[in-house]
Amino acid sequence: MSKVRVGIIGCGGIANGKHLPSLAQVKEAEIVAFCDIIVEKAEEAKAKYGTEEAKVYSDYKELLKDATIEVIHVCTPNDSHAVISIDAMEAGKHVLCEKPMAKTAADARKMLEVSKRTGKKLSIGYNNRYRADSRYLREACAAGELGEIYFAKAHAIRRRAVPTWGVFLDEEKQGGGPLIDIGTHALDLVLWMMDNYKPKVVLGRAYHKLSQNENAANAWGPWDPAKFTVEDSAFAMITMENGATVILESSWALNSLEVDEAKVSLSGTKAGADMKDGLRFNGEHNSRLYVNKVELNSGGVAFYEGASETAEVLEAKMWIDAVINDKETFVKPEQALVVSEILEAIYESSRTGKAIYFD
Image (cartoon, rainbow, N blue to C red; front, top):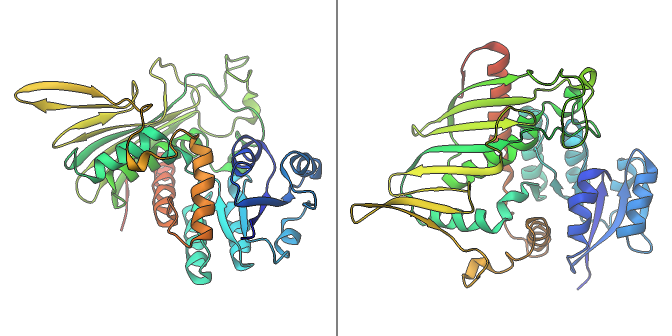
């Protein structure tokens, strides 16, 4: 069987750090086209990951004219996710778009509409779902082991880890800071675990408290306050239609020693679970409280097959498998859309000082 021919649009950090090395480990796929507005980046990516005959482009629309390309990975800034994904699907390609789905919820809705109309698969790069602890916890939730999950926390807290490269600090390009960058991962995990995609009301606040500090301590060196136009932290309370409550916390810079990223805490009627110190379950049994920590390195569970691979590689393999065998994608665009709608509501709530209600 011929391999799935893949084109990469955007050859920056996320492409080189995640998509390209992961796709390189998928034997059913070959990367045959590379596009970046800085053509040297595309040429470097081709030299490392491309086939011998792979082509390089500076204009993604020229790449999309190649009818032999079946799959496109969109690895560009948030403001171009929608237009490129839509153009790719209109050109007959399946699309894996990096998270978040789009800069705005309206754009995300357009992406979903085009996917349905064209019949082309669309998935979003929420790779933390593919981690061993995430998949194990999702199975437990789906089996009802926690009962009704009525309270949850989505954790995305960094103490001082502001990304100072690319356009991360540019609100116009990205739409926001830590909330839309890493908070989106934590929120996706929580909604997926709860299997609850019906928000009712959102109350949130985004802060610009540390972003203007000069010569700040930071994992990637001091940021430039003049270029820091997004929030440095954001927090929200989300009430779902069924009465469940979700607390979302996100930061790139926060005076806190509680540092957790892409983790969740869940409280149900039968038990609770969290990812604070490995994967832990807690509850009551025979009138005694218990805490059980799951050993995830031993395998032995059917769905666990392949979990020894990194989440990013598993994401790439399952995505290409969904394309080849016409399977449902692991991350559904309908789910990613709700994440984007909630994120947008949090920003709106912060701007207006009011709670945002969903219809």
